[in-house]
Length: 437
Ligand code: GDP
Ligand code: MG
Image 1 (cartoon, rainbow, N blue to C red):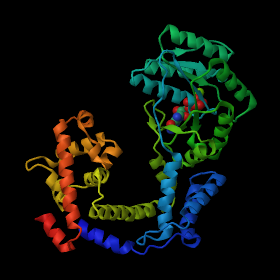
Image 2 (image 1 turned 60 degrees about the vertical axis):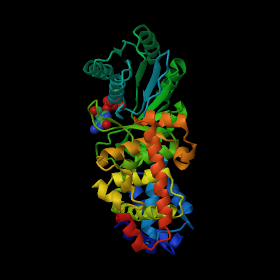
Image 3 (image 1 turned 90 degrees about the horizontal axis):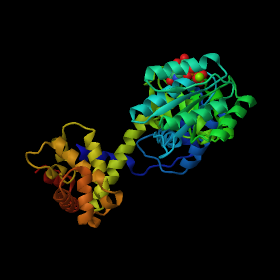
Image 4 (image 1 turned 180 degrees about the horizontal axis):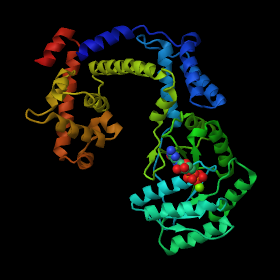
């Protein structure tokens, strides 16, 4: 049962040791290897590993996991933090067109990604205009025209040698045709060179794009990082889109680019088709990066132990009567991931099952309770006393229930908390009886 689980977790956790250089060594070595195998730049990998090591040194270790395994879990979380958070919305101006300037090396996927973005924005009810500003490659204009036709989205193109004037004219077209997002498909080179940068800087100065977005090929690993740095130095990038992640790229470029430039990765390209654009997910990328070797199974193992520790922490909070609606919400989330609601709820400390009506469908009830909890602020969940009539109305409105139901939830919760406090003095056996009976 959960109670027994907590008991054994408690035993195994007492008297935890601390991280030392020696006991982290093995784990960090495998992390470093995984990073390098994933094509993370050497400097970035070294800095990252050292940073994690320094942060962990002296911290307490869970006794049930070996430090060298737990450090991998910490690395995983650090990777997720470093590559996130992700805001995959594109901020649009009101009143005047938003200009997105796409840049990147030749073959990185710029033109394709222009099409993907235009498609996405169009499906969100926006009115994009694609602009063929790559005048270096003869076929580039044609390629964008074909994409525009496929999507039913207009493309501005000219027979010209001057990309700046093409972009400037496109702005006039956008205004006269009420297009609210202008996507500039600029020229690339095989390598960053001065001529390319000058051209882009000119467009940047004369057209004043709202956002410069770098398109980088994840397959090129280390090169992607160097070019990201040069583009960022010249143009101050706002976002990165990492392409070709449907292939066997190992994802190291994502970490390196974020670490070296600080520019957030917003989307990833997952195929040649125009619908293959997805929001960037740092957790998925962290797994991909660490997925080299068998590092990931260590992460899972450590995570289990950490979950147990969290459960234990909550148990202790309950017993001290400090359990609040934030903790309650965490518990519900946990329960939501498991099967068979009612029996589980009834096994929970304090008989959470009593919070459900007799004939209620537990799944539905649970959804309602969660909706109410989600509509509260963390402060309200920590101190339900502050919830007066107007907050109650707001929470009810936000979760689609009646205000009195919000009241009911809080009252029941307080009763439950009372029971938990009483129980803290009972033996484990008596507790079980009280919970079941
Ligand atoms: P550009 O030179 O930067 O404009 O690059 P293109 O848009 O012409 O793309 C170069 C090649 O990469 C084309 O064959 C695209 O189909 C392909 N491509 C672009 N994005 C992706 C992607 O996310 N996944 C895959 N597999 N191929 C891609
Ligand atoms: Mg192109």
